[in-house]
Length: 185
Image (cartoon, rainbow, N blue to C red; front, side, top):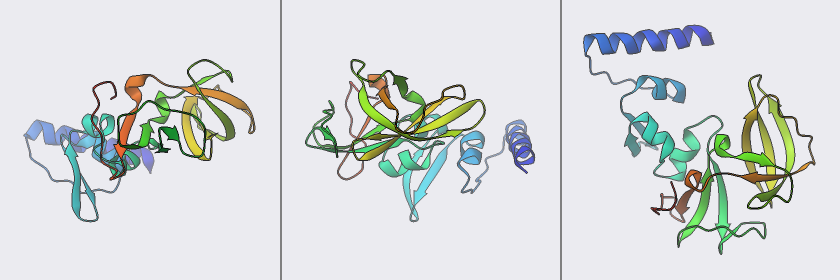
């Protein structure tokens, strides 16, 4: 059961710390990896995709694979074509060569439709999770998930504005590797 797994993770981590052990722990469960590891080695088809501390892996994924793998829900990745979000007329300011715009669902905020500096979007659906919820929004032909307070209610078909801080934006190239840009995360 979920509570037992959570308790066991804490106990194993505490034992490892108390005994000063180096432990290699293999799991497909990202919650286990993120909560128990000093260093996470993320594999993709048997090759190291990224090796970093859990916070770095989450905050600065090296690739779209890492971005999609870590986080619940995972990072939104919107295709970018000629400086616009693909399937829309929304222009985005990203580094040269950017093919993907990434933003974590919890970094996205809802605004009234037409608000300045927001993306126009349409709510497709919502998932109520108690303390929080997840809205599925259409931005052009693409989907962007928004993690909200559980108190937020939005009906399918509702027009909304979506925005986030500039430093919450991630850019990835056509090779799906992270692009460095000092103005972005």
